[in-house]
Amino acid sequence: MNLSPPEQDRWFAEEVQPHETALRVYLRQRFPEVRDADDVVQESFVRMLGARHRGPIANTKAYLFAVAGNLARNLLQRSRVVPLGSLEGSEVASVADETSNTANQVSARQEAAVLLDAIDALPRRCREVFILVKLQGCSHQAAADRLGLSIQTVHAQIVRGLRKCTVYLRKHGVGKEGRP
Image (cartoon, rainbow, N blue to C red; front, side, top):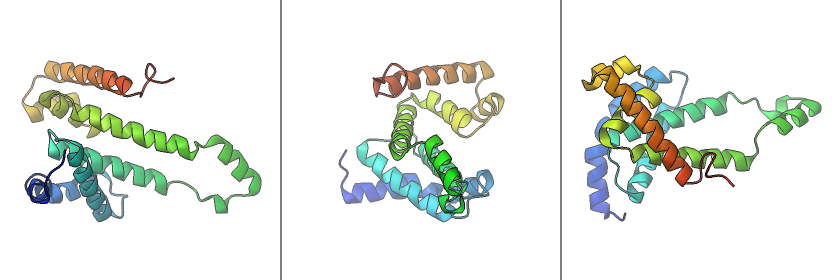
């Protein structure tokens, strides 16, 4: 989807940027260990622009928060890795054998991107419920209260979202049936 620069600027100013303050608060509350929340926010913006370039985003705020959460989790995961230089030779060899290689890491990132696309493809209500429960960690009851739904509806939307995401992932080569 090719947007003209003025259209892209308008979309960003109206749909993404208004959530910047709330996103910073979310990151500080949910990921207090992340030291560079500003970097996460900026990288989230960059990824949002890239995603918008590929096509419309149905729920900009939810997608933005999901992207930022994933970036923060990745940042925390990387910060917990012990540098190889601090290990002895035999320890390095054993760790190197056990860790996934670069190709596996790239594959995992690509699969995560496909998952975000699968979530973005869900129907609006289903996507809202799915993001609240599965990505933001809300309980089913909290999601029901927040969205004004019954708990049964939340359960049904989660099941629906899981099924649709599974089908989407397999269709795009992620999952048991999609792998050679």
